[in-house]
Length: 131
Image (cartoon, rainbow, N blue to C red):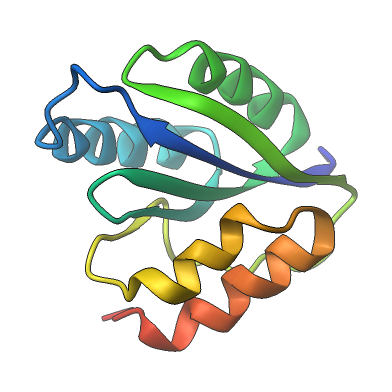
C-alpha cells in the first residue's frame, strides 16, 4: 500500500501564454490523475493558479517535478506539502477546475503558506460547484 501525500502550490500564467491553454491542461491532467489515483483542484482566475493535489506520494513527486518545469506558468511557489495524509478532500475529483471565483479570497493565497494556505483553500470550497 502506498503512502498518500498532498501538495499545494501557486503560480502565474506566463506572459506569452494564452489562457485558452487551461482547457488542454485540465483535460490532460484529468486523464493522468485518474491513471495515477491523484485527486485535487485547479483554480485559475485568468492570471493566477492555485492547485492542490493528493494521492500516492511517488506519483505526486513525479508530477510536481513536471509541473514545476512547465513553461506555461511562472513564479511557481510551493505552499504546502505533507506525507501520510489519511483523509483526501477531493476524493471524487480527478481534477476539479474552477475559473469563476472572487478575486479577494484567492488573493489570500498569495499572502500565506503552509497549513494556513490549505485552510484558505478549504474556505473557498463553498464557492465551487461540485456538481
